Length: 198
Length: 246
Image (cartoon, rainbow over all chains, first blue to last red; front, top):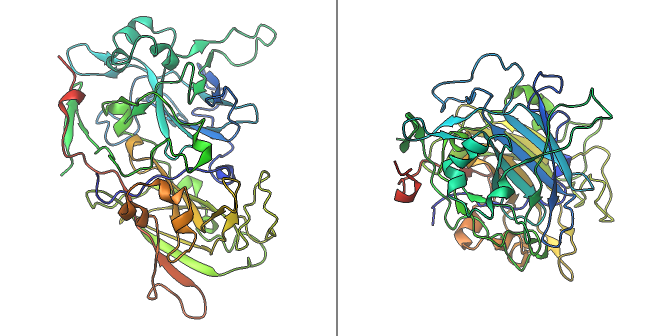
């Protein structure tokens, strides 16, 4: 028992009055060179989409740095407009999207050890009394993912729930967004996403 | 003194894990949890760079009327004007400065301004029910708003939510993120509200209830309430299982 903490409560059904903001899904402006789009849907234990959810992401910049005093290395130069933070409510079809730059790897303990590129993801919705936290890893980082200490701690059968999948390029729209990755979130049941105790 | 742990040659802070303070994700009294709680156990995530840092959203999001919900329209809203103030602290007692607080609430009649809200209580053209504020260097925040109303919901027969204000906080690190609800003292609906009572420890429940404060109350103008919010503070111990095997 931790003394004194204020308990969590659900965001309820009406958080969209306040929490979303127009450029919330844009960790970087959409026309940033190298920007990627992460799309996904949120599902409940019956396989129904969750139309009243909220996804938040937090991540390093492409050099693996954070604009935060507790990263003593500080942010890398050259990523103008990069916020590290994204926020998107789900739509009536349960979908969300985040536009960002792929983060770099992070130093881990041991010579040469590294955490594979990843985003931390917070999930909120009516019916969740506390946020749940997951991580998004990248499909083109197989070697780094295999060496990642967090992925290594997870049952192999469930690891794929944390790795985004590449969406087929939209050939009809060559001017559209570059890389599109899919990251669906299943709160319960078959294919349940791995959630973390942080 | 912040507890620290070395990761990848960097010395990082660590945050306590909130054992027992928060509600269980599977809580039968609140029916919407049934299909929305994970059934697999949570996996312990050591706190690394991504977890001990977090978004430091700033004053660029804030305008002065954001913290005074009674001045966001041409006229004054209906209802009891209140001043709501307090401190954001960590569990080590240190103030959490310069952190964004977001709030949303019903109007005085218990009606949210939201398209999916069907409670047949009147909307107030002079009240939206949303606010933002930043804590100052001492962790202090202040809102002026209207006492929200109770409202019915479909959880069970004759279910009514006690009056509350939703709060969203970032703290200074991803680990400190908190979304909660603030309640009012003496509300007879609290003992029968599943969401309030989802918090297992009665003392922790009381920490969601603001205190009436006559000294904060302004004569001929507004009632004063005080509510401190406590986020996770420095971890006391780095568990063996959290240290990488090298």
